[in-house]
Length: 241
Image: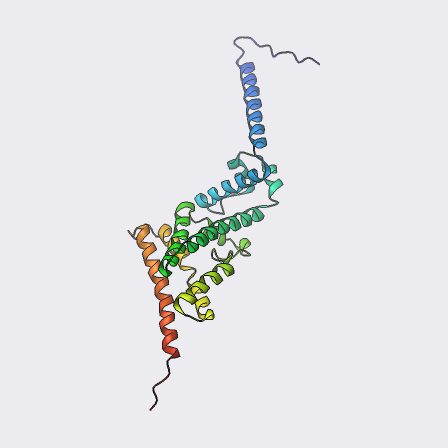
């Protein structure tokens, strides 16, 4: 069947509005279709997570939904559901991705260190840098009870990271493995606290990014060295009478 063109009087504004709306709608649908087919599944999944991360960092978790994420990503809500069955699964995957990204940067920093202080500084710098660039995405996601299965930002890959650092510190300072491991495990949360301090308390301090990093490094190094001194003292025999 041949579709006849729309006929309208030169001054028929209603017909013009109808035609304009039709053309605009068709153009938008065509554009949306092209944008949806431009990305392969892996890229589309990554794009959805990227937009969700931006929204969490800017607005917090409570302000987002599957619908708002779809709008931000420029796709339909049904397409988002094709990749993630619900918001909890989406946010859990986002949290795991952010933790994996952070741990990778910290591991690279640790491998490139030549001294004990350099090792601590590298790990500290990596986390504060993450906070500075990405904001409190991890912190906000962790505050959600529904995401409690993925724990502290230092938890993702924590065992391997702690074992790796504890082995280096144990050899460097001649500490027993259990003491070195406990010291590293406990102090692992300080870089995270430093990064959060920079963002949360900007109205209460004038400290620079570098000053906070220096303080954090001194606290970690001081704690580990104090463990070594305490261990040596405890190993010394009491003087005989």
